[in-house]
Length: 170
Image (tube, one colour):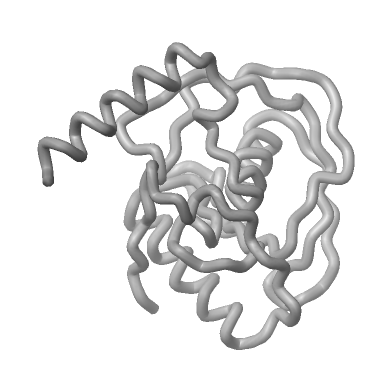
């Protein structure tokens, strides 16, 4: 397995819509394994392939928590097919948007259709934290960051902070 580099804002690759996976094969399973090693090392709760520079519709996540046994979930070509209600994701963060957290409005319940790591169809109908994580990671596959869903003022404050840090480091 290989630790992958996590792309951070403002890298333009985070804004691209990922291409569908044609076949879940050994290459895709290797990408999943490398993504899992990267996510757990970060540490993070979820990771989309575009965050590590891979143009494929793959997400992985683990909401079991650090005290529990890891329970890696893998979705290939995930799509939200139903959504309802509203909930506030409090203090949402992202490995690609370091050192920033914010409240984000999300759907309360989502139904997602995808393929699993063996290429078999799966359907997930969920709410709460699970729904938040799915929405966050699927947004990445569509070139959307959680900072796109917060107030313009908070977003601009973060952008200025990043620009200042980039100038300082160059």
